Length: 255
Image 1 (cartoon, rainbow, N blue to C red):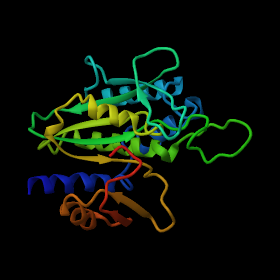
Image 2 (tube, rainbow, N blue to C red; image 1 turned 60 degrees about the horizontal axis):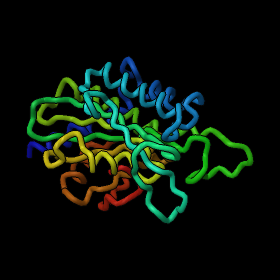
Image 3 (cartoon, rainbow, N blue to C red; image 1 turned 180 degrees about the horizontal axis):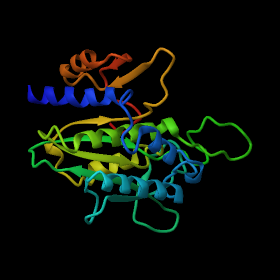
């Protein structure tokens, strides 16, 4: 029952992000920074991705989150070779010629609780286009990624701000993944090289493309199947959205 109550509280905070007065750094502020042309689409291995990672590190630090990356930092880096064959998986490797380094940014709210709730959102995007882009123009074009996924990162940070001083029944891992567009690389790497005990994870909420509602305000929520409390809590707390609930959690995002 306690876990059900906690889930309801976090979902209530999520739904309230649509209408609450902005905090000192608002949803719009975070999206504007991450989707700015100067970051050139936040592709892994570029200066734009590093600038975005530094911004997220500063945001987490300002919120009072503990660093939960590698070696006492907020960063967890991973190195991979770009795909030459679209039908093969990306290969993680040591740094060297022809490799790309991505950066996960990880903060932690330590309530000295037994279990941890993970709240995540990828911050990378497609850079100037390329594989995965729907753009068909002749000249390279910045893919700003305001919806995919600056919107999810902004919601994640607002939730972190709301949770850092209340709801202390769990610890909270706040993680912004890189390499999602290349095949969920950052989240895959984190699971295989976790900085927390994954056996103590209660559940995970993943925010992806939550900033562009259709005219009917429909919002898709995947992965409700493992526990009936998801559907019950979502339906009970929702007042503003037309929910599209999907039991399966399988899909092209970091959950």
